Length: 269
Length: 269
DNA sequence: CGATTCCTTGAAGGTTGTCAACGTTGGTGG
DNA sequence: CCACCAACGTTGACAACCTTCAAGGAATCG
Image (cartoon, rainbow over all chains, first blue to last red):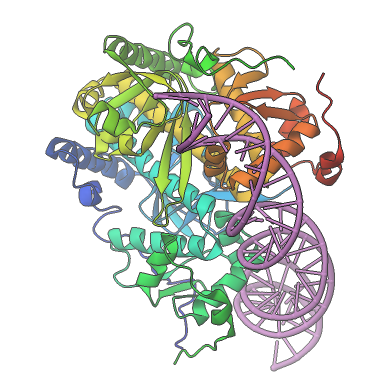
């Protein structure tokens, strides 16, 4: 197996090609032409604002609210990954969303929620910043921008619903299948990758926090999926070998014989 | 124990008092005066639209998209409960959100998502309808309305995040504690109830789909919570006995001795 | 009152968590 | 260069939580 690229210089450090996000209408064929047009205009308007703002580089593991010095700022990820989390009284925590390059963070600040205080970087990141929520509210006087903001919120909601369904009704393999497929889809849609291989800057502990499982179990199921030659997740690098079976696991449509799988031997070469 | 009111005439059939939703700023003390004002204006504008629309009554168990005959309509619940679900290939399903009187449903239709096709009524409901998403897009030309729509989306997101955290890191008792508390909070905020008792028009199967558990286990844990005199859920009626312990369970802060609890005897008199 | 759905309970087994230990990796400083 | 350290990854044994299967009871409705 070839040597995996180190964290510095990894794909997620590359700036998004052709703008921070592709046209938002790429996967919504049902919406009317008019909304498509307005959304594109709104996106351009936000592009202008973010593009004109100074960029900052943050290390992995920083809390965005503290790092930018304002809880009501609104950021866009230019490079790197981040996650939004919720903590519990006993110290455990859950990751409720993962942000990829091009995603906008902290939109809830419009309504006074200090969401940047619950967002942490997963890797070294580059962010563009609108310093205050007030500026964003101003921008929402333009309907295209307001529509685009609503579209961003709606997209985040769909991710949450999808994760919710997976946590609710899939076992560990199904959840991992869903996660690896979703990240792949999002990265491809933004043309950050082209094939079925990508870098995933999350530790197994963080994956466990995201999928509602423990590190130990994540580790075991990862091994099973690797030995079954469905997907490999090693050294922060995901390689999808059998996308059909992966989709099947994510749809709850297959019961892969996991006991048999574990007994097999890795034959990668 | 007193006889529980039947479904007809139950609290969730009563129209929301003082308008379909209270001022949205009630639980967001941090937001600026200006946003508060604009949100209130936006809410009034939507109130006018919905208030002037014809109401419809639907039976329990209907799919909203089919019942209103349009997948891109936008509805507001005047009375009754509804839920949004996601299905899996093998027939299982997950409930990703529960809607209470006053909630707006199907906002994603703005972007072409047929969300009404994945929303089902949980009880007999009364709805007000904006027939097409296009009308709502028109309304978003007004910044107050656009802000209010974004606020509605943001609220739904926060519910999803909270449920996500619960599914990710709480056991069955913690999830049930979270659910019963959240419904209570939402109903009280809208002045649909005043105390710690309310009607919950969901079967145990539906609760299981919502919390990612099986009916059988919901049933057992419900019995344990009842015998521990923390919360009673019988015949679609929730009674919170010990809100402190319930909050503790929802925050992962307590490990109630459940084995002992099961051995106890019900003493409700 | 038959039919359907919902609720309830027991027994058995599978998935996942907990505990504990050790290996690996990458960085730091002597 | 090596010792050391901290974080992360890996593995085994065992326990707990939850599901599955099965069956019977209770409520609701035409």
